[in-house]
Image 1 (cartoon, rainbow, N blue to C red):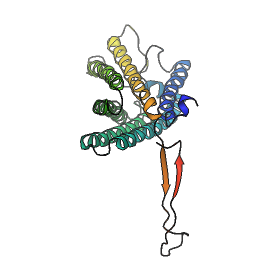
Image 2 (tube, rainbow, N blue to C red):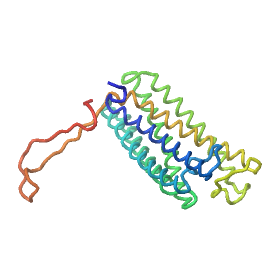
Image 3 (cartoon, one colour):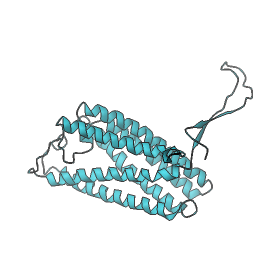
Image 4 (cartoon, rainbow, N blue to C red):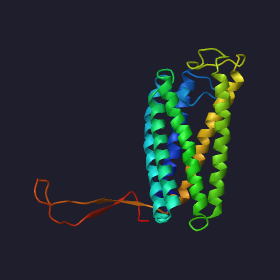
Length: 266
């Protein structure tokens, strides 16, 4: 049996591979059609102009669905492993809410381009990166509290390093983008897709875009740490029938039907 066939480990794997493919295909299309500069454009700039925006939006919507599934499975796994620890239960629920809101933000980013509805696009980016970073932080705290009884210390340290990587990237992106959009470098920056190295603000632009790509890669790295954990879990779906027919009649007891969902039992 291959590693991705064990449990639900294919979920985080598919999430990372699909999202990377969305970035790569949109980037190649935008570069080929000369819609953006080859040197580190904003990720969303590669999905701003047709036809790449159609590809970018469709693939990121699928990413949002995969992300919801991955976050939910992680929530159920932590809940099953620590059913009576109130602190972990509260953190786990908080992580679920943060993760789902981050997925909503990703869908907003995919469907509202910055050149069309800048406010909606920025709101989606804040949800995706901001709440997504908090989700990673909460999951790292959970990893700390679950070791060494549930898993080894190595998992915690790897996730902590990825969270620090994400925090450094976020700080660099926020600092440079605040300076860039302060109004000292022109008023058309929001709509700008092409940059000249001799323009004012070019260095800040490059640092901001590099930090954005770096932050995205930190998300990839964090979800990849789920692969080993997800090899040890599967989910079931259970149908509870209230009668033998679908007519409006008094229910009669029937046997419940349990069906495997996606993989083997926990």
